[in-house]
Every structure is written in structure tokens, then in C-alpha cells.
Image (cartoon, rainbow over all chains, first blue to last red; front, side, top):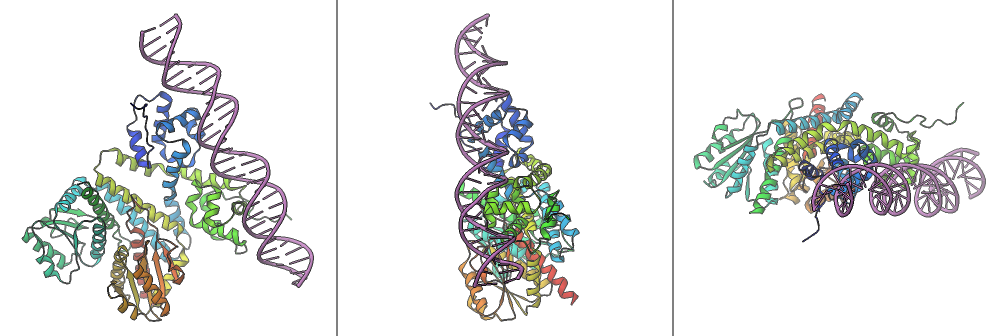
Length: 276
Length: 276
DNA sequence: CCCTCAATGGAATAAATATTCCATTTTTGC
DNA sequence: GCAAAAATGGAATATTTATTCCATTGAGGG
């Protein structure tokens, strides 16, 4: 029917491009394969290099690299480059250098403090990403997806997390109820067996939240617990336990991982609900 | 002896350049100062932008930006750019490798999504750290420190940020009042001239928050505005504007920078209050 | 072994981008 | 308020860089 479609559509993002590179057809001609291999290994150079430079690294003529870009679906090197440039424009290389520099100079305390919190946030995210158990996320998502209603409960610092989760769930069109803790008894009165309670609590665990979890358990409501320690006393009651540990700065914490996690859950849930 | 030396030698590295920018002579002509300020704040864009783009961001003619580069000691923009490009080319591989590794494995969607959000959070924090103007933080802290009462106001996603700020301020023993938006009129009725309004709003800006800011201005209450764009319509009304831009994932955001920022403010404030 | 077609490299061309020049405006010193 | 100097913006030019073209090479099929 149609002419050889090659890779008709250009990748829309760097990660899409990486995907494609991971599945490079072995039938690719020699030079083009060289390009693919080099690109896969030096993906970070595209934003700041010319075709000629990339071609030289791949040990290939510029025109060959050009053809390679077109085989990927781009109109040329430039079009591919804008992808990398725009992603890079949001980021920045020498984080550590910048941080230590900030600290070294007599920067005001507050600025240093921010840098410390930023670094802590970064570490927390990395730690969590590394130790993340995909099955748990999946389990949580399945529970949420099947829930008639999701009840959100958290006191003190956990309250911010539930408010954001509530906002995101609403935005995604997922029914959710935010309990503010004051009318606690009334809250648990509305728990039903086909509901899910998403409870957030950090050490030292607020007794209200522990009570609500216990109550939910008694009513047969499914329970997802987001906490910062597997030692949370009600962990055994929960169907899924998500442990988000935040690196602290002078004993203070930003709930970066928790916020990122609930956002992820909401967005993933939204995608699933739409596909139904 | 010699002719006017200007900045005879070009900076040898990005951090040397940053040093120089931090000590920009006030005698610099207007346009050139604009360039300096923009560069200081968007240092990361140089590697992937053209002079024309940088000039446009600085709201300056390309030739002016050119002169600015030369005033710094470079022969031109290109020479300055190689500095950034080469530092970038050296420093990135780790992070990219790590990410593409994650992707390569057939991880479930939600896990990938978390990794994306984690990366976005990381980028956001870096960006903010880079462009952070210590004076603004100081100004905000001074206002907060002198306030008789701090009023916190934010709708929708901004609400989570204010709830966390509220929690932290309480913890630090700083008087703060969280307005939840429903009793808005009542809220602004309590604004006094020696109070501070800490308003949080992101595009598209909620009319409630804009109204509250306007009302506060009329009452002589000092205003600190936390937003994600300098274009916020009430930015001119504010005494201090803090711009926390979050990198998005498929148009969704986690308020990582905002949360980190309010935590920083609260802790820094707590330290100062204690020292009094 | 030859013919055909894909692949390749280098050179020619096109496009984008940096850089300089200069007429005009703005500021500074008197 | 005037003259001189500095600063500015826009247009002209130079340079770099991407892209295409085409002659040559090499591989695969009959």
C-alpha cells in the first residue's frame, strides 16, 4: 500500500527517543548503527554539539549522521536538537558545584538553608526511587481504582499531603473525600466496605489517625497507609503500606517524597480511569 | 599606563563568571546591567540558546548582549558559550545514565511516572536554587519577622502550601492565621497595617486570591506573593514576589519548590525569633 | 561475474547565527 | 542648556553550521 514508512513520526521527547534507540532494528546499515550506539551512550551531548561533532564521535560522515536523524523521523539534526535543548533548558548541570559555591561564600543563612533543603529533597527522591517497590504502587492503584469512594485522612503535617492529594484527585475526576480531623467520628461513620481509606501519618503518629485506621479496619474498609516508618503501629492493619522517608535538615523536613508520591498516584489513576 | 582594562581577562570557568556577575559594578550601563541580571538568573540557558534568544529574554538588542559579553572579557557570545557547553558536556552522564537505566527495564507505568516526577522535582529545585535572589528571601523574612500577624491565603493547589506553612509556623512559635477561602470577606477584614499577607497563587490565578491581595494593599498590609510566574497580575502590589517555577510532567506539577521554600522561611524565621 | 540498488563520503548549497558598523538617542560634564 | 561622550537599536555583513546533492563504493541476487 504505502511506501516504506521508516519511522514515520519523530519522537516527542527524549525518553521516547531513548525507547526507540533501545529497539533499534538490527537491519540498520552499519554507519547508521554506529550513530545509534553513539547517541545512546552520549545522549547528553546532543544539546551542546554540532552535527559535525557528533558525526566525528561516531566516526561517521556528517551526512550519515544527518540521514540517521531522518531515519528517526526528524527532518534533520536541528529538529532533534531542539528536543534536547528544551529539556535541558529546564535543568542544569553543575548542581554540586553551585551548591558548594553558595555555601562557601558568605551567603545569607536563609539561602544556605534553602540549598540544604533542596539537597535533602533531592536525596529523598533518589532514595525513594531506588527502593521503590513497583508492586506496592500497583497494589495501591488497584485499590484506589476499585474504590467507590476514597477517604483522605491526615493530621498536622500530613494534612497538607492529603489536601494536595484531594485537589489532584478532583482534578482527575476521581471521587475523594477529605476529612479534616475535627469531625472525626462523623468521618469514620461514612466508611463503607467498598471504600478505601488513604491515611497519612508520620512519627510521632497522631492518635486520631491511628484511631481512624482502626475504625476503618473494623468496618472492612480497605486501607492504604502513607507513613515515614515501617514501625507505624497500625501498619499491620493496612492493605498497602507506602513508606516515604524524608531526609531532614536540622530535624526539619519537607514532605517532598509524599507530595510527589500522591501526585504520581493521582495522575496514574487518572490515566487508568480514562482508559476504562 | 595601560588602556582602560575593562574586564581584561575572560572568566576561565562558569563559577568564575558567576563570581564576576555577583560583583557587577553599578556603573554598568542600563542595558548591560539587564544582561547581567538575566544571565545571573538564567545561567543555565546559555549552553542551549542563541544570542538573539538571550537578548530577547533580557529585553535588549542582540548587539547589546554582544557588547555585554565583550565587557566580560570574551571575544563574543560564542566564546562565552563554549564555557557552558564544555562544562555541561562533562557533567551530565551520571544522571542521564541512571534514568535511562530505569526506563530500559520494563518498569510499570506508575513507577516510571514517579521517576519522572522525581526528576522534575530535582530540576525545579536546581533551577530555583540557581536563580534564587538572596535579597528577596531576606526581604521576605524581615517582613515576616516584623509582622504582628501573618495571614496565609491560597486556593486550590496553593492551599496545600499554605497549610504546610501554617503548620511549620505554628511549630516555630510564629503567629499565623490560615484563611481557607470560604470566609474571604471576614478574612480580609482582619488585615491590619502591621500584618503581613502571605498569598500563594499559581497560573491560572484564582480571582479570590487576587481580590484578597488587592484588599490587603488597600488596607496597608504588607504583601508577600508566592507564585509561579512574574506575570501574576497582582505582582506589582506585592512588597516581595517569590517566583517558584515547577517543571511539569505531562502538564502536571508537584509543588516541590513551594513546599521547600515555605519550610525554609519557617525554619529561618524560627531561628531568628529565638535569637531575639 | 555482472547488474542493480543501497550505502557512503565529500563537496556544494542553503540556512541560521554571530558579529560589526553606523546613524540616532540618551546621558554626562561643564 | 550646550557640547562631547557614551549608549543604543537596527540593519549589513561575516561566519559558522546544517542540509542536500551526487559521484563513487560496496554488497547481494541472479
